[in-house]
Image 1 (cartoon, rainbow, N blue to C red):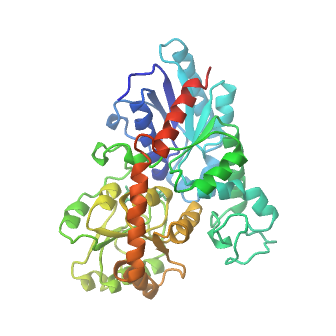
Image 2 (image 1 turned 90 degrees about the vertical axis):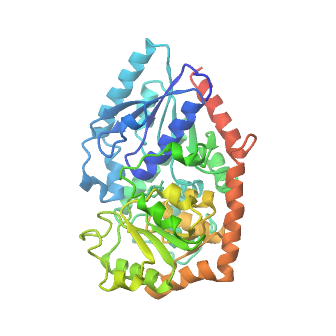
Length: 456
Ligand code: UDP
């Protein structure tokens, strides 16, 4: 822990699990580098302040409710309306007024890149803003290319000229079907993405929970295109031991996972989790369940409350499924994922390819089966399967025989063994970058220097 720097940072996370975790991890990291931390947060999906006594919290009323989280494009728009902007501006302005009389001036705002409205608020208050992008750099590069992709007809508009399998020549190795899009409201989504990129370009710097060696081509291009300093300082969750729990679960994790894993052989379990948001149709669930059962491998499966549209927890399971398992499966509502992935019994991760899950799996050397559903997950899955070659992409949709074959390929076949070996090598790289002189270590140094000098 470094000496206090006498400077305070204000952080503002988007109230989604995959955005709260990296922002909290960044808060811990910058606190350990001597900065004091204030977190402004929405009153919905809020972090429990009593778990983080080192930080000061301010909750603002944003008027969000559960149904706002059903459609991503609409949610992202809502997060950038006056309903959020006004209480945020008021809160930040008050913090700045109070800090002018204190011995700890506010050095900057660090807000989620998707809270693009915060750039103009910060500028109007003469406060520098850094953006934290909780997704990867390769998907961000694809977002930055949206206007030109639209112009060239790659985005699926009524006039779209391209077939899903076609290569996007500007963004290798992406195909049209790997582009980071949503299933609904494409026009709204396009608008949100363009605004987030434009406002990032007006910021003092962009922080990534990524690693230079992992995404260097995308990072290089972003540096050229955005013309702002870029700081890949990940993997954020690896700066501190996992017991110190720098991330926050909005749902209590079911600890029975760990005792169940303790009873299994090394590399024998497929961990199945589709993150905090993805929903699944009941027919798909049935295919997943039978694919898992027919593979005859052990599995630990996270089925969130509300993950299956309109169904009670476990009420969806096909009849005869549980009986067919003979104890080979364990199902929970929420897992302590970092601990699960670090457990020696876990031999594969069947994931929706959210960026946090992808980074967490890379850091533990766990090979992946990718089932992307939307947005940046498509890009992440393509990189896992075709660039880093540390997993398989379920290309042919959710079908029980395909699932069974893919699990067997990863757990039993030579191809799977090669993927496992590459995953172990990448895990080592992810470790080295945090050591003194490593790429993320140096990038963090540069970020700290930049924050300190930014108001001079
Ligand atoms: N997570 C967890 N337990 C679970 C499922 C997910 O702790 O049972 C955490 C996971 O470790 C990750 C986050 O939730 O940090 C999900 O983020 P990600 O970017 O992978 O996906 P999203 O939920 O944003 O789609």
